[in-house]
Every structure is written in structure tokens, then in C-alpha cells.
Length: 86
View 1: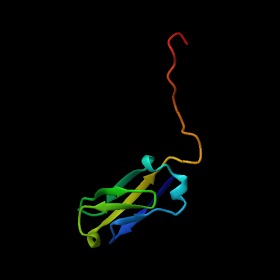
View 2: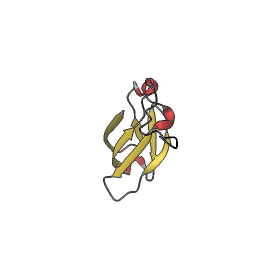
View 3: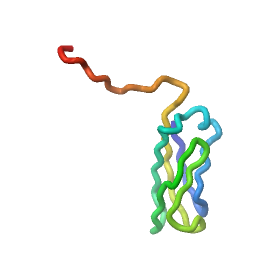
View 4: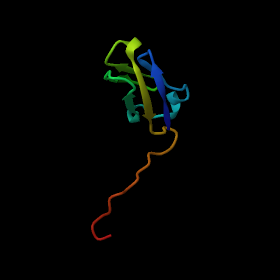
């Protein structure tokens, strides 16, 4: 599951309400790209919002891409280890 967008003048990314029950909290990954010379980074993450730090919120302008693993299905195991001799 993913959500993306652009933030200007705030330090909070509000996640969609459906993320609360749809995404595993410990699987959330956040990618930020500053739109100016200011450095920004992730301060805190949960299933409802992401806090960003770095400069005063009024100076922030960044793009974001947030990915989370679905909680309503079994964990995907993309590659399984083979036993010796198989």
C-alpha cells in the first residue's frame, strides 16, 4: 500500500484513515525529497501521521512517498530458503 504527495508549509503528513487497520505499523517506510535547499527528515511515524523535522514548518516543502505492508493478508515471503539436497 502506498501514498504520495507534496507538502508545503507544514511538518506533518496525514495518512488516509484506512491505513489504521490496513497497514502493519512496523512496516511503514517513508521517503522524502526536499523541494528547496532545506534538509528534512522523518521524526516520528505511526499509522495516522508522519512528523517531519529539519527546519521551521513554514519553510518546509517536500515530496513524500510512504509504503506499508498490508495487515489484512498473510505476510508475503518472496523467496524461501531451500534445504540442502533439494
